[in-house]
Length: 286
Length: 271
Ligand SMILES: Nc1ncnc2c1ncn2[C@@H]1O[C@H](COP(=O)(O)OP(=O)(O)O)[C@@H](O)[C@H]1O
Ligand SMILES: [Mg+2]
Image 1 (cartoon, rainbow over the protein chains, first blue to last red):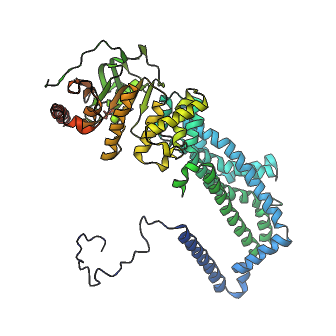
Image 2 (image 1 turned 120 degrees about the vertical axis):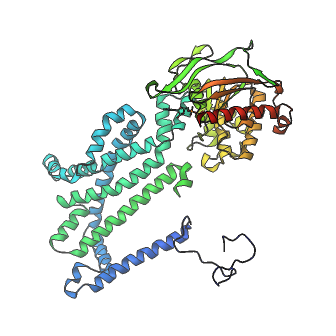
Image 3 (image 1 turned 90 degrees about the horizontal axis):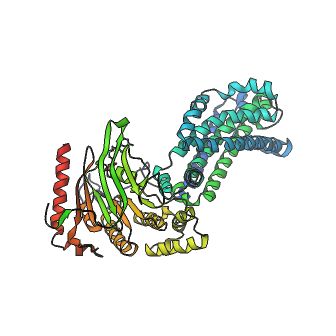
């Protein structure tokens, strides 16, 4: 009906032209309003819990405690928080991830921008950095344990090693993606190198850099939990590992759920930072 | 040569930009973008560089801007060899280069901040430039909120606010639709009647070249060389505020046809 040009209804099948044509569910380039997005998100969440619930229901009675129901896990989480001091474990994990991710950013952001601005520096540093991405960070665990013992430093160092090389590579790309003409325009206006690196390249790349950071902190959570599971007395991973020894699947799943929720919260935090720190990019980020 | 045009002869006015047998080669000298470019750009003159695509128009402009160096010959600005880009030669790019993180006002102030104009004065002058370009109401808007034509006006205002001796424009209106392009052309005429700038304009739009320029330099391609260098005598130094006034001129059509012929010759040459 939409592709007919004449006012005459062109018979397409027998339905006639005045019947309203339904849009397909999967419609290309069709935007979703914020309200629709929330509703769809909630539906997705409900479906997830229904599948979980169904899995629990189908599990034979004698092994049901290895796949507890969502309600059970939530009530376990509540007990952990109110009676078992889980909140302080969460705090410790948050402290570790924020501390080490800050360190990662303090190195990766300047280094990535520097390499992105100066090709000779990129040629000097990039082979080492991009090669290092292929070293499995987990293989450093024994070495880090020898160096630092089962300390906070050891955990933060693992997260640092697991994330830094990827973040540098991403920020290098973000920097190099800055439109060349912006730099050339600044040059023709007589801007100095310093003014261009800090005032043009870094600023132009900021939205993309914030995106890279947001994506890499998700990976950071993975390394943190690995470090805490391997050797820790406290933190979310340690609580889960201890529960594992006593086959307490509900506690492990409560831990997983907590990490998931915290991950979503760090994601939202980064989006908020981007929203307020880069107001000129709001149109694009929505 | 046809009526109404004649080969450009150097007048007694001083050359602001002087290109002396300049060449730019790439791939270690194996590929020649432009060569034998000897041109004098006179003070207050608007010159259009015209030619088929790939003939080296942008290259010539970039050599003058100092963003690239000639591999042979020399280019002088104000009598001195060019050493890199500088605010005496403002450049307008075809791509939108207004900084997306600065408002329209911030963009126009940017160039003046670089020149260390006192803040209050820079703000006042930036506002005036925005008014000139009919952007007064958009001072606080970010480029993302502006149309293509407005973004380009911000970029031109930013460059002019630095008061460059020479204005280099590389297909500045090439990305705009026909109506906006025409409005921008008339706006340029208006600005030029007040500012008396030396302008070097690259364009592939023949009508635009004839409308805006006092002189047209036509390039051959492969390698890029100056083929014709004509002064638009029919305009008699006059710049038409309205485009139709120029289109009505008796000699206009003839020059336009001549440029099309030259263009066709070049295109057929390369196949
Ligand atoms: N950096 C470069 N390396 C190699 N070839 C180039 C480079 N820049 C331009 N060229 C070539 O030089 C020629 C002239 O380019 P350009 O000045 O952009 O032409 P125009 O602006 O007239 O279309 C083209 O063939 C182009 O491919
Ligand atoms: Mg070009």
